[in-house]
Length: 262
Image (cartoon, rainbow, N blue to C red; front, side):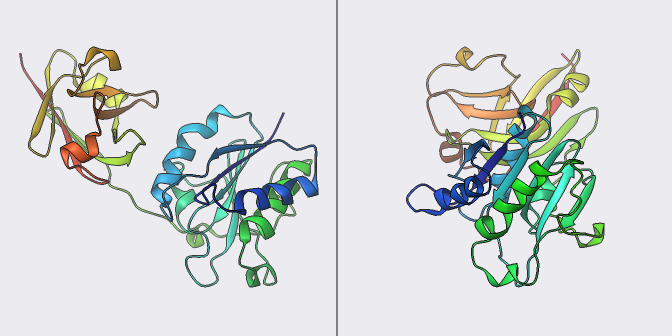
């Protein structure tokens, strides 16, 4: 059954999450609202995009994903709806939704009217009722939601690209999870192709690891390790430790995978 997911940086101390859910349920009390997370780092659209990108495909097709992180950070910033295959995303045109995938969305619609722009709680006043309207729509193509937006008006956030040759893959840390593990943008797909029959060194700052392990339990307490996680990207961690703090790494820190002959 199609449903609404909710992702924000609101936290749990205040009424904000409940107010958005109350608005949705007042429009249709039969809807199901699933919380993805409300502990996104404040105003951090990179963190929010990573979490959303990691999980949205696990929800049924036709689901609506309501996102409220760093909304209205700029004057007259539009609220938008985008369609990617059979999923719908609602949020601010602040670059966050551009990070869900590299390709352009299948459709982009501006959903905020001039009257809506006067409010200070767009997640409740605009996005909540729009989410319900999309689920009520028979054609599921954002018709009647608002005015279609030109692709050049869709705000993009540019992230560092991976560079790969036969000798090296150069990537970056794109996320630090709650354990302090360093999530990179280096894909297992690329690694598997380039590493065949070669020795491997994972290099970052002044550190180096030999090879990639298969499971978390293969390392001992306090040891650094590299592994490909469930998203199929390279992750660097320290068993029972915080890799970001102990290794002095942060978002955008460089990580290299070097290949050589045995």
